[in-house]
Length: 421
Image (cartoon, rainbow, N blue to C red; front, side, top):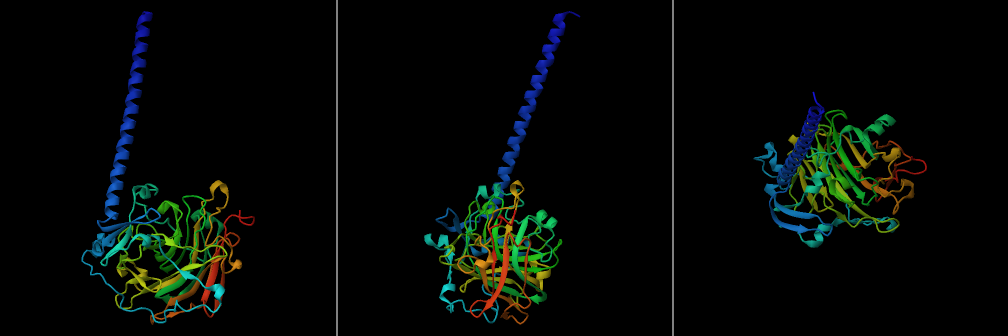
């Protein structure tokens, strides 16, 4: 065989290799485009499910769009079990003995003010509608998947007496809470000091809330949660926002934040779940707080939520739950943060005010007038209240009791410091 034949065959082989290489690149590009196109379509479908047609839209000073959606068109009614549900416009009963929030504190140093929502500055929703924070494409794209958007990671309810360092590092969540257990509970209430804690990483959050719990901390935990949170991943900013959450299977497949899935039925036209609350407290300056009550209607069995003295927001239908269909077995109040241990160090994400409990009023964050609802639908101070924190040199909690604040506690901390690495 001559040299020219070898040379010709070599050029043909190289040419074919180039063709195959180009074909491979084109195929990869086409597949990537198809995948991106498919994802965009899925995101749009999810946005269409969440963002219902609005009677009116209001732009909040923080950039949120609040859509006034007809009450009967809200996301809850996408649930197959709620297709023919008759909206209950008011609870059958309120708990007896609601604490008088207008009572002036005997000590003027310890007076605080209620807060409102930022979007109220630019308008209000008509009667018969509910305010819904509009979900944007970027909100969904920040989530790990479309399916997980608006959901907590598993095992985020604090389990007292489980402060095993391996478990702490595995879950990445840390808490400073007060709790009661060992009885049947039909609701809980607290007035929660509002701050704007600093978040180190966008995938971390800081929140202050109450938990109403039933079942075990394994696969079947039922939880209803409400409070305030700062969550850059969920909302795309560092604003302090009112939130709710529910799950009936330990944060696996059921439940979500706010109105981001079918479940909670809202009846109130003035308060938007997930919207910014303002103003917030400042160190050694004015203090602001929000009052939250969640209780089980003795007649209908639904779990109702009230914000402040005036706003009954709506309810979680009892069929959503297994254990909580009857009562709760544990109530928790307090703070939670995500510690992602970036660079192998403890996070500097703050809990509460970012200061330890011993600093007291105006410096440390508090829960006051902490109460439970008993089987007779009475609000009363919790008996045998305990505290729990995984690492008290990072975030801590201290109980107290007096005439104005009833059962209270200070909680929180700075995260990473000389004693918390």
